[in-house]
Image (tube, rainbow, N blue to C red; front, side, top):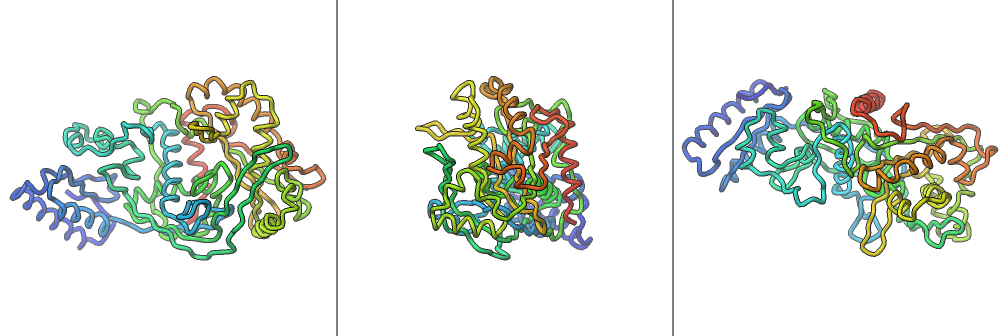
Length: 460
């Protein structure tokens, strides 16, 4: 009954013996576990799901033992931060250490973006309908497709991996520090000229660290693909809208042997666009430029105003020495306040706001500027998405028009950073997915975009 696993044949024999013993125990005393199901996942690994157990703690532990010790694999991903990492901490405004919860939160957020983009089912994370796993509904489901069976039991496609009430996460994740470099210690209050309010940047974490993930091969393949995508276009940790969490994968130990696609959905089961972050509505951009001198950042709006502040300027000098400059406020200030929007509600909705009880997340993110390794070239990247809610449909045409103008040429963005043409020797702006940025992308285009990204970001 067990599917083929890529471990030693003697262990397969042992697993079969354990299975037979469990079967006999269940026949003798079904008050411990009223039912269990052997589930085969594409012949890659075996998982035992024990459902509807009353006092079956030992049986539950037995299933975990089988999965974790006989079928699980371990992958180690070594990461270097390119801009500060933010995972929160015990003290407000400080990162005392790298918190796994902050890493997991960003992994889940980006996985939701990608799964929606492929047409998968992702529940609203704030909805009352996100109730978790229902063992009774799982047992009553008539489908033979395991993914659909878990959907019938209340688990969306992302919750099946990341867990929900009554359903354990399909992997374990831990973080260890490999090389803790100089750590920022001064909060920066950046206010471009003419602004009474600005952006407050708390010191994040810098250095090299290792993410260790333990899980079945299929789950590891999906997480590996996810990290490759996030390395290229996304971020780790919180506060991406303020430029935190850009990283580079240095090395991967025990990468998954099979680089499976994220997900695939038949056309009949694909979900429509909604108001949540969906890869079909994203546009990504990368600006690369080569400044003629190392002090190019002295004239960046909001930064140049800090030159008279000894502590802040010393912190900026150290950040520059470590290959990063907080240019995010200057670019967001340029896009938000250097255009006459048709409605005051539009920039609040697009760039986010916290006013009274209203809390809107920004749909636009710019990274800090970071120096590319072993070059004099710098890069800034970011993204925008336009969810298909009421405001998204109403504001789309104006927003796209403005972004096509403001982000149409690299010179425009560099001017927003206070640089003149004589201050840099080369500049290039690239938009993704091409050739139709700023538009809603059909699922085949999204699939091709993801496949190209993964082919380019191999860490074997």
